[in-house]
Image (cartoon, rainbow, N blue to C red; front, side):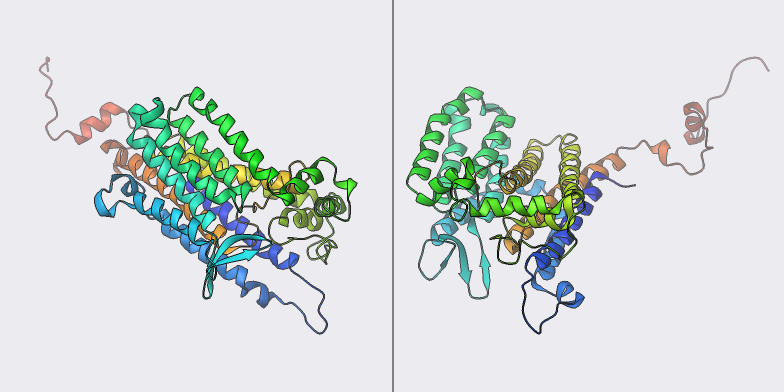
Length: 407
């Protein structure tokens, strides 16, 4: 029987397949005497990363999620997640280790291995907040004992990330606050953070010229079409050029030197141009099915830790996809936020697949518990198809009652 967890796996694999194909297509360049064949697509870097993501999904689907919550002492992974995330967010600024890409230090290079610490912190803090909220469920409505400790830790991580990646910082903060509200935090506690968050956001924008330019481009990209408005204009041109059915796979025009970041943050624009509205609708439907399948799992969970963890995973994927699509279509200022499981990248694909695998593991646990809870008579193979409860009880009773009435 097909369960919600199976649906999540199908959605993840489908998105990864589309991602591999579209990243290869968006990355095409006109090079003399060079052709692309199917072997390069199937054996390329992105295909290998997709295979690693699927393997990670399978491994995570077999992990006992409750162990993250029940383990204590040195084996408790929560302190290590916090310390490791904070350390990596600091190390990224060290010369020789942190790598600068497009004017921002977001990557750590360790020989042939490169990854984004903010990606690991984004998913790691979901586990941390879910663990804290489940451990302190009785005091989450209190400001000092329940709400402030995880919020201070989350705020520190967001400050470290915001120096180089404001969009991811806002995403992590938003998901964390939503999880704390779901865990029982009071809304007036959250309202106390609004002035602090607003002041931090304004400071981060006003002290960075390129962020100011992004806001100007969002308000009126045609004021400087060859300058700050160029990126979003080219993105909208790609979407408009696709129409209903698209130009056809591989036939994008904007990817040939017109649209920057066409394989990463703006991959959705290339999807719209090559596959049209129909292709974009398929992608949106896959995300919707992923979210609906995930919510169908967490609504049946009884463990607070698992419920909050699943909620955090779904909120992160949902908000990230929504922000990316809003940016690409010109409905939000440009942010460096990738489209989950589609935009080129190894760290994002692998950790996102791992997180969804935890949801699949929860679904397997629910199915196993439901199977064990079945009554004994439901598994009898010798019972008639239309047997009543009394008939089944008579079959299972080794000493049937004897009638004492008249013969």
